[in-house]
Each structure stands twice: as C-alpha cells, then as structure tokens.
Length: 610
Image 1 (tube, rainbow, N blue to C red):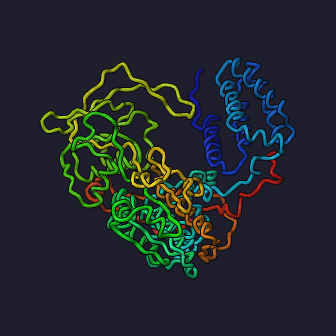
Image 2 (cartoon, rainbow, N blue to C red; image 1 turned 90 degrees about the vertical axis):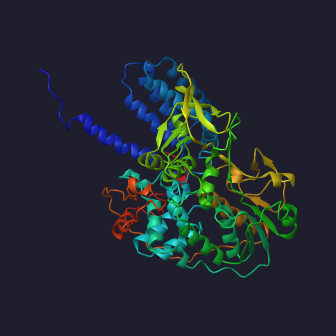
Image 3 (cartoon, helix red, strand yellow; image 1 turned 135 degrees about the vertical axis):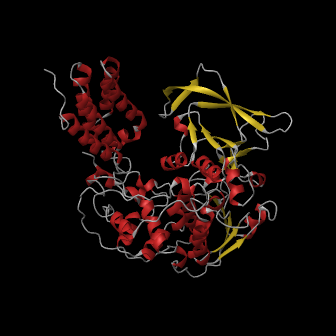
C-alpha cells in the first residue's frame, strides 16, 4: 500500500541541517588556509558517494589521506604527484558527477594554490602563517573597526561611533547611504542566522547624530609641507583629510563648482541626499589645513608640471567620470547618452525631458540601475534594461529589486547589435538586438553565450542610455609624462606612480570604475605613504574607548532591515528612499554582533592546519 510522505520526514530535517551548513561555508573566514577548505569540500563529496564505483568510493578516501599528510607537514613532492595521478584517474573513470567534480576540484587546487602546497611541504606551514582575521574588518577596503563602532552604537555613543569610523574613513554618512558593504559578506553571525546589517547600523548612527556636529581629531602641529590633491572626490578628500590631520597643508584642485566627485555627480539624490554628503565634506574641511581651488582644471588653469614644481608631493584622485560609448554607427546621436553623463546632467540640474518617452538602457551595473531609476523619476513611459548575460547583472540585488518595483523591465540573453537612426533628424529611433543562448562556463566561472537561431529584432526607443562603464580623463596628464595604460594611471599598491618621484594616485583612475569605499581606501593608503615619503611617520588617533566585550548568547534572531518608502510614492520624487531604523531596531541589531575582534578569530597554533 502506498503512503504519503510525512511532513516532518528525514529529508525535511536533513534540509534544515544543510541550510545551516551552507551558511557556515559562506562564512568561511578570511586568512584561513585554502587547503583546509579544499579538504572540507572533498569530505562533502566523499559523503555524497553512493559507493557503487571503486574510483569514487575508495579513490577519494586515498586523496583525502594524501591531503591530510600535506596539512600535517608530512607531505613531499611525491605526495603531490600521487594526488594528481589519483585525481586524474578518478575524473576519467568515475561513473557519476560526484567523483568527477571532486577530483577536478582537487586538481584545480593543485594549480590554483601551488604556492600553498609548496610552503606546506618545504616549510611545514602556510604561505604567510595562517591567521584567522576578523572578517568584517578584513573585507572592508578601508579596514574600519566594525565591531568597535557597533559596540559603541549598542552603548548609545553615536558620536564616538562616527569618530571611530573616521579613524579610517572620513565619509561615515555617505558610506552609510551607498556603501556596497563587502564587510557583510563573511559575517560569522551567518553561522547562527543572518549577517549583521553593518551598513544599516552605520546609517542608524548618522541618523541619530549628525556627522557635521561631531568634532574630528585634533590636527598635529604644522610641518610646513604642502601637498597638491588633484580631484575633490572620495579618494582626493580622504587623502586631504588624513594629510591635514598629520599637520601637512593639503591644496585640493577641483574641476567642478562643488566637492564630492561621483558621490555628488554620479549617485542620485534619492540614494544620497546632497545635504547629507555636505555633512561629511564640511567635517573634512574643518579637520586641518585644507585649501580648495574650485573650478580649476589641470591643463587649462594650471599645468601638471607647475603643480609638481610648487608642491612637496602630489596625489591624483581623478575618478572616472567620463561615460563610455561603443564603436558603432549612430552612437553619437543626440538622444544616445552614457549612463554616467546622464546622471551628471541630472545632478547638475540640467533639463532632460523624457516624460512619456521610451527609454532603453544597455548594461546591468549599479550605475545602470541608478540611471534606470532616475529615468523612472523623470516620468519615462517605459524603461527597458537589456543585458547579454545574466552575469552582466552586476548591480546589487537590492538595487535590481528596487528598480523592478519602480517599473523598470529587464531582459537578459540579448546582445546589442546596432543603433538605427532617423535619416532626417539623426535621432536614434530603435536598437537591434540578437537573442542569445547560454553556453559553457569559462575558466573564471563566467557564463558564455552564443547567437541563437532566432532572428534579430528591432526595439523602438526615444532615449538610449549606455551603461557600459566609465573612464578617467588622463589625456592632459599623459601629455606631461604621466605613465598611463588604456586610460588608467600606472600606480602600485602603495599608490606610488611608476617612475615619477613624489607623485601618488589612487581610486578609479588607477583601478577603473569601482566603489566609493575602494576610492576612500586608496586615499587613506596614499596619505600615509605620502607622509612616509616626506620623511615622517605620523599616526592619527581617534582616542575613542571601545566598550568592554561580553560573551553573547547564540539565540537565532532576525536581522533588522532598512525599510524603504512605498515604490508608488518614491518613484514620484527624488527624496531619500530609505526609512530610518528605530532606536529599538538599532540597539537590537547592534546586540547581534559576536565581537569577533575578541572572540572566535586568532592565529592558528604553530601555523599548522591540522
């Protein structure tokens, strides 16, 4: 007799366990030995084996034994050869995917982490001696003391929390609004329930205490040194902030009438209200001896050579404010515009009349989402976003979801062929799109596509926005000898420009278009390296005492989310979309922090991984 499966059967309970295990894997901490991770993944595959075929059943056990011997410091070059030949055999002869995938996983590790295997065999330890670092601090590009300021928020000391953030990042308010929060990616709280809402807590702090009213640390005595900062965006202002606190004079050359760079001209008002940005900028300018020369363009108002001659050092924080265009016919039509240019025009208050018109946007990054959501607020009739691959949707999932809520429509697996323009007006009137089909993944794990057998089709539009990246305006500097390659300044990890004494550079003009927090991190690194170049070794102290850590209970608790205004209301204006957390929500969310700066993270004994 057949019976219905019970609701609480073994499979359901196993799924619960696996979901918990999945969060543990995603929370794998930075600094851990990669070979230990591969051993864990290998053991998972061994547990999945059905035991029918010999290569998978016994071969994976032998591979694990060999890998363990390497981790214990008992391996040799012959061990690696045995592992390799064993995995090749398993991959070629296993009956199902379990053995094949597991063997290929280990083979990948032998090439990807050859240096780790070599160090374990020759030195009996990891490459840099294994240290399990605090995930949120390590993954924050600026290395802000996240557990520290969360503890201060929990204690209700919001001004101190802001100053602790400023110890590494002088834009606490702006980052509270727009940071992509990489610090949350491996939060150990996810082992229990969900990652701490770190950006949400930062926003809670600046909502409770205006950053403009929080005094910055006292500046050091003046050194008499003068540094030129070219660009008043996040990297340039961060560099100026730290240099001024060290006692140097920072002179900022800004091309526009106002400071902020892409924080002001690239991020829409509904995400980052400019009055909030001014809170951070005002505090930065009051920190020390900072002079700003507005509406000053290098190459027009002053030469790069003159700046180098008159200043003790130079930092180039040029940003990437020029939108890219694709090399195709009709791309220069009046109603075809790069997304970055579109956003800057709106930010400067220039009139863009697209009410009731059809907008097409090519690209799936955060800038593209900002442009699409801005078009919705300008009352476009329809907004369609097209991308070739699902991988091209690189914007934050929250931004994509918000755009969908606001009426933006999305289609993937469509390649952009060409622009059709009207012969009389010269205006773009349609785009031609080719349907694609998915193919194998490439060596980087990215999906490939190829043309479908379906015919290309024509899609009408009144405005075409190209969200295909930005570039830096380096032409003037190149003419004066600045080393550049493909539109990027050539600088090393210390932000020192190659073969150019006393010149430093960082942010988007070095890395290509990136995030605000990455630009801030570059400005911070450059400031301290400029200080060293000038012959000093200053320290910037925020002098904030962090509350004593206490052991926490590990009761699973829901994550406090930042709520947003109703889509039907927020799409009608440019007012800030996020609703502040309540004091109760902020305190409860801060209380979820496990204080990994004191509990759970530290160096492994003797650097061994067994």
